Amino acid sequence: MSDVRKGADAGPPIARRVMLSMLAAGAAGLVTAPYIQGGWEKALGAVSQNDPTGLSGLLPNPSGFRYFSVAGSVPHKDGTNYRLSIDGLVDRPATYTLDDLRAMPQSHIVGDVECTDGWRVPKTPFAGVPLSHLLAVAGVRPEGKAIRFTCFDGVYSESLTLDQARRPDVLIALKMLEEPITHEHGGPVRLYVAPMFFYKSAKWLSGITVTDQVIPGYWEEYGYDVDGWLEGADRSV
Ligand SMILES: Nc1nc2c(c(=O)[nH]1)N[C@H]1C(S)=C(S)[C@@H](COP(=O)(O)O)O[C@H]1N2
Ligand SMILES: [Mo]
Image (cartoon, helix red, strand yellow):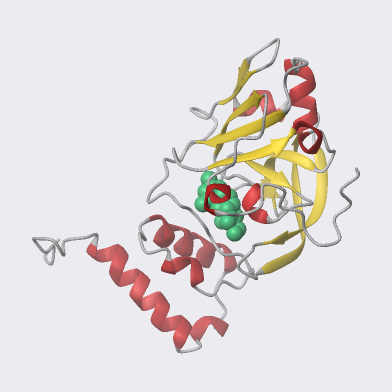
């Protein structure tokens, strides 16, 4: 690379240049150009992976989604190295591969996606294993009252009460938008908590731990409600 700079300013020059040009494209209204959506999403995802400012999450995206990651970079995982563990207050702790999860009962849900930042994507299809199924297989002990979720980005975490976790509209999602979940959207496996704000839907899910009380997740430490119900959600399910 000819223009690698030295000193405090030496960052990833290509990533920064791409990001700036995409910001410029957005500002110039070029986003109405007929981008192939997958390509645009891929490019955006690649940029947000290298974007410590989080600014790229604000880039316009024809699908309506924004990409969020509180981690600067996230390892890519697939069927060869992905693992999901379930442990804590259960009788039968286990670790699952992607194939294990694919072989379990799958549910399909079409739900609204809504971030607290105000963007919303209605009627988004998700598919995967009901969390209730995994909990039943693991055998939650009587002391178990809540779930802590951890992620292979090494940073993010989330929580649900046991009652919330057992709802049929809470999925260990393997598919989103009828396709395997992309890395940018938290693949190969993310949580989907249909009745709650999207921050509850932890991306890059790697751990499910049954705890005796709710341990607030990443954003909840900064004041987000641990009960992130969407307006109109049926809380009694
Ligand atoms: N691991 C992880 N999961 C996460 C987040 C994150 O930063 N890291 N952001 C949350 C927030 S605030 C939102 S709105 C959604 C964004 O999902 P998307 O990037 O697929 O649109 O993921 C949620 N899950
Ligand atoms: Mo969000």
